Image 1: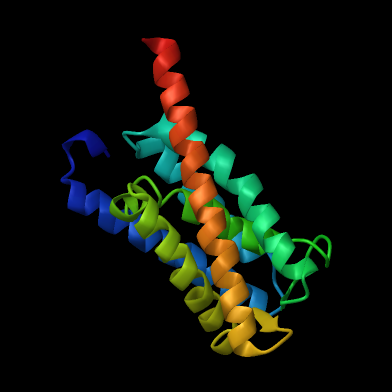
Image 2: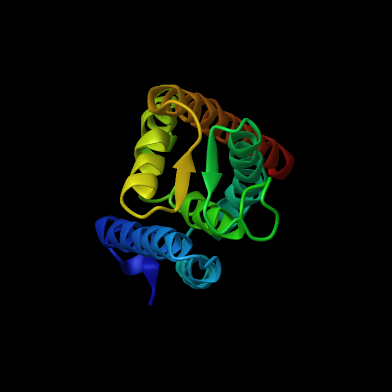
Length: 186
């Protein structure tokens, strides 16, 4: 498949569908005590995305920033005792493998299906502030992939702050590394 000849909207649709598959398999698997199904689908999504993306280097750079920061963000949420993840493999006090599978898939949407949001600071922050609690709420209520450890509103606000700030930092570091890379090649 030559993505250079694909209309942008079709690549965007494939990107959205791929990440939705990662999300659903990850949270359904975790809700049933299985950490590995989401990882399998996420790796498949990543391999296909990186094989066909017109922006492979940019995606790899974004992944190198988002994966460790995503691990840190979700580990902070666990350590703060705001939430507890189902299937906490390999270590209960840290972000589990299935959450990292979600981060792998999510990071590969930032330069594609989420590019219009990720392009600007305020929409990126608001997306994290609102989208984080919504996604975690759905994973909690519909799929039992995690549980809230405090008051629901308090937990949603904390998740929103962690996600709003965290996603903004990911964006800032990503842009900074892009400008540094361009300065070195000029």
